[in-house]
Length: 318
Image (cartoon, rainbow, N blue to C red):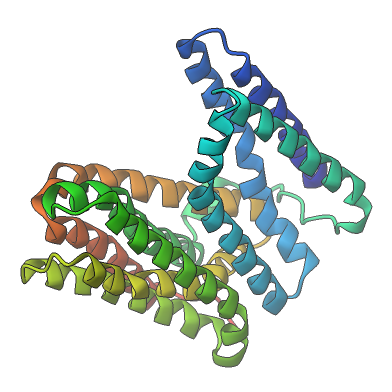
């Protein structure tokens, strides 16, 4: 099946489910519809990397993925602000907005369909088992998941840690998060040029090491009794910068390592990221009110696994 048509169809389905959410008669029905909401939204994340690969050379594809990552980091940061504004028009106004935007994007893609190159079709002999048994693919997919997962584990636990354990405020967390997002965007948009200059493999390993060192620094700071919010925000900078530098080339190399099975490869990378974050957050959750060190320790442990995999597993042939 043509992934361009599937993407348009999924966006239309997302719009229809958004409308259904806006008209939901009860909370249980809304919860059920939200499951379908998430399901219908997954196609873009799965198909987009393959489409980018088909449209651009490797260097330009890395830059495109970096830009896409920048947008993806801004949306969750700005969504609460937009949500507060939309709340004035009713609780369901955000669903109406999502439906309208989804239909708009679907129309734009349908209009430009002829200009988009046909992405590589899903390989007939491809399978998830084949990818899961491919150590080269796992090198890039799992290292991507562990670097991003280590960061997200810390981010998800940071509000409770800073307000409960360190007697700070949500403002302290916001400063840390906004600073981190800005640094990530800068790194992600520099990643393509730096990969051209120094090589993708050096950027992937260097960024992973930098991100892991940032979390290790937070762990050491926590073990030494440090609690200053600005110091935590400063130590969190290399975590975000490292991810920004290694994220675009790392994701693209994972797609290349899938050997033409782009959609399944992208789906597994996303699954690994979500799974790593969920498990790590569950492990860290009982200890977030115990201070900085436990949360940073879990995040650092996961992030260091990324570096280990990069050093142990075989990389793509040049």
